Length: 271
Image 1 (cartoon, rainbow, N blue to C red):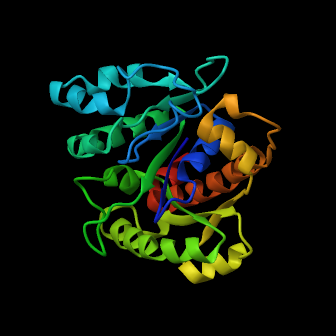
Image 2 (cartoon, rainbow, N blue to C red):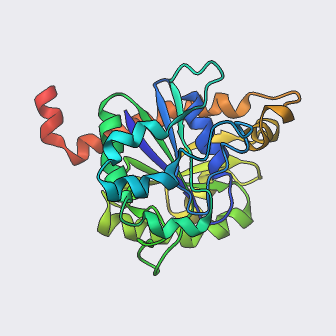
């Protein structure tokens, strides 16, 4: 029911945050590993489950052959232990050198994700660290810019530390400019704050001049499992997943408000 893209200015826990949102969604969810640096969930959290024959890196070829729409779902694997099909993963690239080959395919994938949204899925996009071609534009060659431009909300992931805020500032400026000129508006951008440091969410919001949409607990035990898999499971705290479930309530409010603003005639007809 929503398409949410997560990105960062520097390594800030984007993949763990995206995985937490995908696993805690109250609806069926698809996690799309669109990080141009490559995907890590299959090798980490899933412990190597699945095969390299499926994944994002295969979709550029399918797009060129005209079979992308038919093959798209064949490249998903389950995030659920019970393989219920409610939590799915589109595994990412297997090498950063594959990123340029996706340049012509991102728009087609964005269209397919919008169809999933209409079918009741929450789509969570892990876009990794942003790649910009200028101070006002994301790279269209080496970055999944079309996915962010089509998303209901783009969350810049930042830790509540001074170092993370400083690293996020240039990314916030580029994202605002790009979404304003190429996306659905600069107001699509919000902050997802990982509460690791001492800075308050209100201070982070003020420093970056960007609203905080949601916050996730600093939960290194669960983050370790998300990064390295169940073999690393010790005594896992559940703070990260609890806060991710709370984040969905706030995200739903933000997405609903933006959709009403962007498509008032459609929602007036439904009223």
